[in-house]
Every structure is written in C-alpha cells, then in structure tokens.
Length: 504
Image (cartoon, rainbow, N blue to C red; front, side):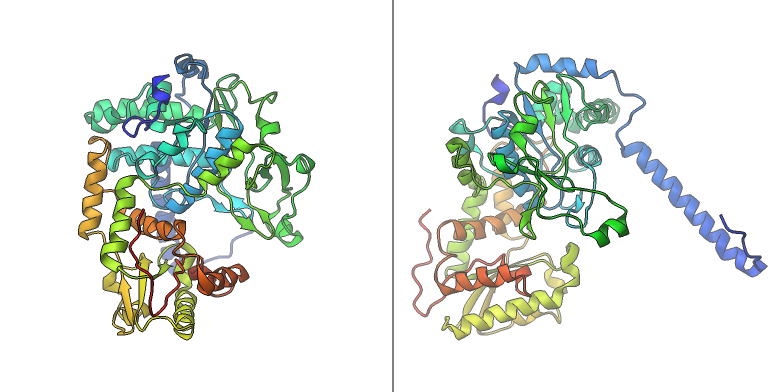
C-alpha cells in the first residue's frame, strides 16, 4: 500500500447548619456566585472540547474504512508530557509494534506537557481511555490554533524503516484514510467547513480512543496501564507473576486502591491467538516507562536473546537520530560556537518538580565544576547550559554568576539565534507543508540542544575518563546531583584536549 512507504513528505501516515450573622452572608454569596461561574466555564469547556458520545455514528460505518487499508493491522498509542518523554514512548512503541507485527502509527508531537499522565509510582494516573481522549482533543485544538508537526518531522526514521525492521504510517496519512479527513484541509478550510471536518475527527477519535469499547475486527483498546501491568517479552517464567514493585499498605489505605501489578508477556496477551489479534487497530494508552525500585514502571523490554531481529531493533532504537537539518545544526553549534570539550547541563527550573528544587540543582552543578577543577581540568571550563529560565530572569541566580565568571565560558542557545531560525526554515523547506505546519517550530531550540548532547554521547566524547564514571556513579546513587548529572555530557577536560571537531 503506497501510504505505508516511508517518505518524509507523506509519512504524516449533610449536618445542620449553624445560624450565621447577616454580615457573614455576603462572602458566602460571593463564593456561591464564583463557584457558579466556574462551573459554567467548566461546562462550556467540557461541551466544546470533549469527545462527544451522543452524536457518534454506529461504529460499523467508521470501521468500513479498514477495507481500504489493504489488510494491514495498526498500533496506536497516546503520547504525553514533554518531548523527551514522547520520544521515549516512541522507542517503546517501535518495539511493541515489531513484536505484535503491526504497522506503527507515527504520532504528532504534542505541546510540552499539554497532556500529563500523572504519577505511576503513586498509582495516580489517567486511565488509558481518558489519556487517549485527552491526546485526541489536544490535537484538535492544536490543529485549529498552531498546526501539525509529526514525530517524523523531527526524528529521522529512514534507517529504521529501510531495513524492514518496522512498518510505519504517519498519523496524518492514517486518519485521511480511516476518518476520511485530510489534516491540511482541516487547517486551511474556512471556519464553517473546518468545523464539519473537525466534528468528523471527533467522531473518529471517539472510536479510536475506546469510547465504544472494543469493536470486533475493528478496534481493540488496551486498558492495562502502569498501575496493573509491566509488559515483558520472551520471559516465559515471568508471564503472569507478581511484579516486585507493588503499592504499599499505607498507600492502599490512604488512596483506597487495590491494584496488583503483574508481569505479562505482550506477545502472549495481545498477539496471535488473543482476542485482539483480528482487530485492525490496537490502541494503547501510555507507553512511557522508567526504572523504579528495582522494576520498571510499565515496559520491561531491554533485551530479546531469543529473538535476534528484535534484539537488533532494540539496539537501533537506543539512539534515534534527529533529521539531518537538526543534526547538522547541532554539529555546527558544537564545532563553530563552542570549539572545545565542554560540560553539558540541563537546568530545568520552571517545569514541574524542578521549579521547587533550584537550590539542589545549582548545588549539584557547583559540585561538578569543583570536581573538574580538582581533577586538573582546563583553566577555563566550557559549559553548555540548556535552561528554560529566560535570560532576563537570571539576575541574582547562579546562572548570572556563571555568565560573569572569568574561569568559566557559558554557552547557551536562544530562540532568536540565527542557527535556530535557519534550521526551522530548512525543516519547512524539507517537506513540512504550509497549511498545517507552524512557520517556526515552537521546540526547535530544544531539538538542537538535545541533538548537540546526543551527538557527543553517541560518538564517545562524553563517556570517557573518570569524569563520566563519576557522573554515572553519583547519578545512580540518587543524590543531589541526580537532577543535573544525569543530563551531563561528561567530557574529559584536560589542559591539552584533543581536537573538538567531530567528523560525523
């Protein structure tokens, strides 16, 4: 089927009340009015942005689209949180699609933290249906206001798909077939026509997100999430056993939960012979995972010794390169702007949990710089800082101190830097269509920063010598350095460093 071929231009496949004095009635009435107003706003928002159920057509009508998909079976999931989390999920999705022999629907890139999963360790997360609904609704809002950017616009998938390791179709191509809606038309049409197309997408999203439940041979929704399931593969002895990490008794009592986490083989549960095998679309919720207390939060597939094809794929997805335009910008920044071995630090100060840990974050960086000096580093240490704190807000912070230090050379990238603007334009010229592609990618700065660090790690510059070992060792200990150190590019800084130029 032509839509399945990889191409950057088309892969976007009640108590008695106490009597109150008259003076106390005024604030109460004001509170009541405020509550009523907020309730009205919430209702308006819910009624306009939530997937509707009353107007959904019979699932069979929408499922007729599968006849045009040449017998292919697909895997869809709900990306969420920041870009790094979305990229991590995408790696897992590649493996899951390969194991289940399904074509992976490459998702769009969501706005940073527009959709949040919640906390897996605290067993407080959106259930898969809610998560899928939230992702779909966010996408509809994004189409109307900003535009569409596919993960394939940012990550180079050419080598991944050229060797037939995995089949992919971009989300935009897929829904043009399944829903009968072209994203470019939905973005560029006049408002009355756009409204009709977006309504069709809501109906389609309702089906894909599980609003109708499972529909035989059409959609199978995966309701397992990180509270109940750790997905494995090829570990026969572990299939069905309890996972080592379980909610403790205090949490069970406090949250009134009764979850039991079980390790389940994804192939045996959702593969051949299972109830989901015949479904054209297998829809997951979150595919994010990370190590936690000796286990994994959701997916424990790090090796497949019995399956060499998957083992090879596991190695490939460890490093998924950015598209050439972004990779070249990262190399240019390193070779032409920094020109020396350097220390990389991601200083997230405004986002999520990090906004409450400025002191610990800066302390970790101070300790690292002191260590490098003690180890005989150069007289001037170069630091590449990735930070979400605008330069105008550095006054009085450790970042201002770094910027004014004679013994340190601080390098940062900003949205208005020429290399960032040029890269965004090159990406547009490379195949990102006009109607649904924003003129300047909101996170292009982040992508260039990420690729600068990934290039260093990939080609060994960051993992040599005692500095790298120190970073890894301290990070694993979970100490104050963890927030900063795990994001370092740990170069060996010497008085006579090797040539910093990268022949990549």
